[in-house]
Length: 355
Image (cartoon, rainbow, N blue to C red; front, side):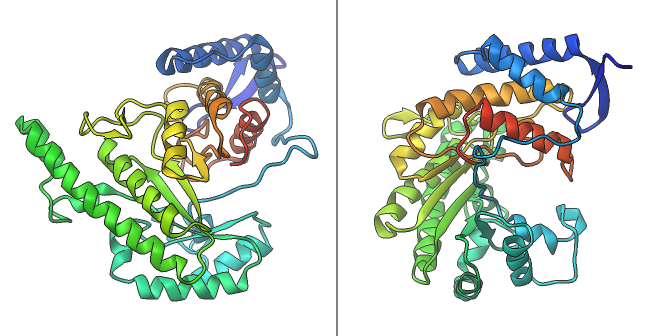
């Protein structure tokens, strides 16, 4: 078995592959990204470097001293106290203790917090509670504390919200009605995001993270961009991070534009440019994982997209290295062998500014 290298599938299964098979998957993976995004493939030298990272016999790998990058997160400290169904560990401690442990035990560069549901809509009704909670947490931390929430336009549709459900209207052929509903819901989402962010800014919020933007399609992303535009003017000293839901903006509306640019169909290297226009300070791309393909195939795709994104970006790019994106297998608890290899590859080859 000396010619076999331990890797994983996109669903986390531990497998062994020959060096030639890994090299083939790396090549096919970068070709797939280049074809879909109309971007350059990884060079032969970069593919060799990527193979060397996978061929490293150690369980974990890392960058050389001096090449470290900082991290931002989507409320990662909350995983210490979240229940197991939510991917947490369910430790008998409060969210406040988890945030402090994340700084002082995990030695994080920044820490994130948010409402347990982590969606925008529920926060509006308890904003005074969230302001008090943010203020208390931030006064106890040295590192920047970023408040995060998913825009989650889906919660604004019936039965959860007041607007007709576009996902129900489209199969009925009611395309114009669906578009109108999305536009009206997007306006409500924009207003709520601006309200929440400005209220938190009043108590000294360091940063605001728009997590999983575009999860409900192009209208979801549009609402987020419009909100960022307004928030940057009202809260100039608060950092704004735009984290995407996927590598490709779904055209649920299909025609909606931001500053003359149609949002449907945009890939990361195009998404980052509209993020800059809206006032984002950090851009987080999310490259989807195919669970049926190998981790090398998936990571080659992710690195190809990230490299193309960092090449055109004027703001820091923090690829999402969570479950099921950017080369991380689709498992509840990502394994350290996969996470460390993805992280090293995205930083050294993809030229990511952070993670």
